[in-house]
Structure formats: C-alpha cells, structure tokens
Amino acid sequence: MSQRMLMEKVAPQAYANIFELHTYAANHVARPVLDLMVLRASMVNGCAFCVDLHSKDALKAGESAQRLFALAAWRESPFFSREERAALALTDAVTSIGEDGVPGDVWEEARAIWSEKEVADLVMAAVMINAFNRIAISTRKAPSLDA
Image (cartoon, rainbow, N blue to C red):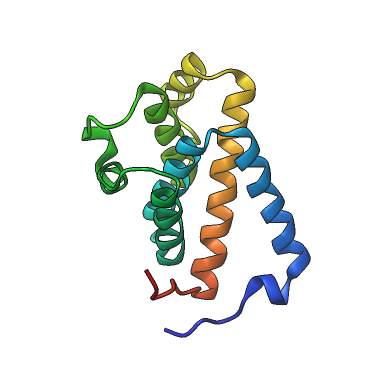
C-alpha cells in the first residue's frame, strides 16, 4: 500500500492543532503513563505507523520491552501498577467507545486513583492519540524501516 498523502503538508494548520493537543498531553500526563496509553491505543486501532513510532519512543525513554509487549494482554499481565491499569482501561474505553460510552466502573476506578483534572488530562491524551491513529490509518502513513 502506498501512502495517500502527508496530512501535515496538505492541511498543516489542522495537523498543527492536533499536535498542540499532543504537546498538552506530554506536559500533563506522566511520560511512562502516556507512553503506555499511546502505544495501547495504537495497538487497538491497528495503526502500524503509530505502534512503530511509539514503541521506539518508549524504549528510548527507558520503558522495558517486556512491558511494551505485555500491553497486548495488559489485563492479564502483572507488570502494570494500579494507576497504569486505570489509565489503560480508560484508554481502551475511549478508543473503542461504544453506544454506552465509557463504562461507569472504568470511570469510577480512574476517579478513585486520579483527580478530576488528571482524568480530564488522560481523556485528552486518549483523544489525541486516537486522532493521530485515524489520520495515519486513513492516509496509509507507513512506518519507517530503520531501527
């Protein structure tokens, strides 16, 4: 499959606006949690470009390969803290949002751990990566073949 377009070139202002949301998330969600969230949402969405990019970024930031691989089965994995699990559950719910929205138990667990503002920041981070996933998938943005 060939790439259809570079959204950042065709619609630079729109792309920049979404990138501002990335900057916001990076400044308001702890790096390890954000790394897990963006990689998990990218896995759920099947975004090859983003899985490649965010797994490399997480490894460079010091995340373990074991935890990154375990994201595929994070609910059954012992490698994630209660805080990370709440963020991952929220990410999964926002990413695969259905007719009923985010389930009450997912929201309540997040609120039991995180402040209202922190939950808002987590939701915005999930919205951000889902927007980028949809852009990359729609335009067939390809991962780089370099290591």
